[in-house]
Image 1 (cartoon, helix red, strand yellow):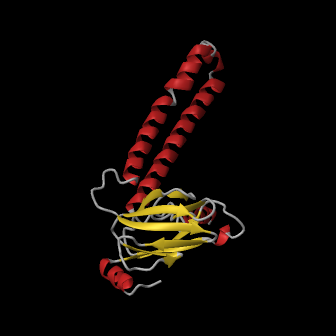
Image 2 (tube, rainbow, N blue to C red):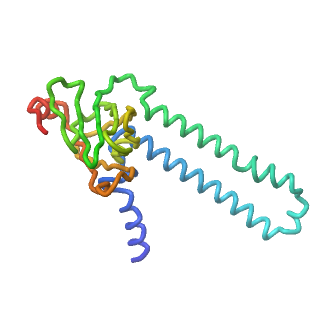
Image 3 (cartoon, rainbow, N blue to C red):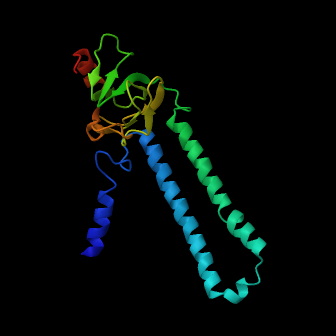
Length: 222
């Protein structure tokens, strides 16, 4: 029974409204792919080191013939360097995907302003639409560029299932690209401690299909 319960409990932690390991869009998918690749690389490197440790402890007499210089070059450079270079290259590739460098689609712009302890969303590409508070409406299947700033202290915008996170800084505008692959409701949080009300500074991102999004926004739902 324990063999079933323990893996089930571990897998349960990989899903949920705020789980970065349960992606619902291409940006979040890139992040989780990078996470799994980094995990696999670290496990592989750990196993190499443990194998080397086992050989040293079991074959001590033979290992004594290896010079200190060889240990430094072999164990410090030859062993980890190729793995680290490969992981860094893959991280840079995924980073390019996250910022939309290779995406020819025009993103829809959303202006997000953090303030203690609320998120205000404005829709500059939809003239006449009023701002919404703590609820962000987006069309599913379309890249969204979030233009972030803050009215007071540093906040951090994060929708784990749709993309990465980035700080909202007073006096500056930072940019983040997210996308929902399908309609749904996704949880978002402030991921930077910002005061006594930080724990309650959450919001919802509601992704609609094209027809519903047009209807919702034309009705100016707040």
